[in-house]
Image (tube, rainbow, N blue to C red; front, side, top):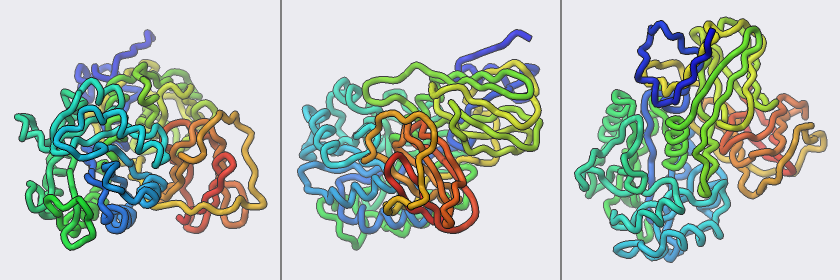
Length: 446
């Protein structure tokens, strides 16, 4: 049979139930969820570290924190948030009326203070004023404004994202904003679930908390707490993730193609060509492949991937351009033809949980050892290990590094290798685990 390969944007040509069997598909959003939401926080308030961080940790989600260089943010506190998987981003050097001229310098200064993979890739504009768009797009993958409706745009984005990546909208919250209550937040999330879209929220300080310079439009923290609780209860439908992560996923999904072939053992190829000097665009995409077996082992370039079989498909997350994906242990796919797809017309149970919880660095276990996989040069300072809300151990910033997971008895329960910006590496019984990434060891409780 002649193999068919289409760009991801071509999915609209084929409806569910078409005579063209969709062997391999890319989820519109991570975990084949129906919509996405990003919580962003401006000004680098003390309460972002002391109050927002623990609240997000409780529910297992990550946010984007936009700091102002000259407002003396708690750098160690924000580094702690980065170590828990949150995104730290720029909100300029001086918070002047317009940050033109500070696009590159604020990025560089914050990168000297905060260690995270790719450094600073998201910027939020002070006073909602768009600076030099060319300078923004040379340094960041996202430039965030405020309410889209203030500029004659929609406040929420569709499945294909903004029309201009230097003007990504986020709805203001709090006393001066449009979102004040839990119902306001959940209403917006329900809206993007229905439209397969993306909503972003813009919060400054919290009512009654230590906010420093973040004193505009304070938000009731209980409203966000309730919104996160609702999101956790509806996690199969809504993907909550930092703005930079959602942007990477969206750009990759639109540019990627996927093809599956073979019988018995299935080989899947996932590629795009959008890497630039800001990002390699190696955020894992959610893939599903038609599958008749009851068991499957999925690997990419020899590294084991977490996977799940449900409804006649095998689901997994894979990194574009990181090598062939091999599915073994079951029957062949339903068709030898394949297409790439953003898959907005289909839904499935989620296999990609939102990230959560912090990691605690501990001395390496005496029984630990690295695994026999190729190791590239990597900045170990950018590595973070934490637990997700539905009990996965996730590693970020570990591209090329050997990863070994040990149980409390020192027995190896998983060996793999870092492939992309983030990677789920193990889920299992409750208890304490040691995760060795390169020469660093982390302690994580499931």
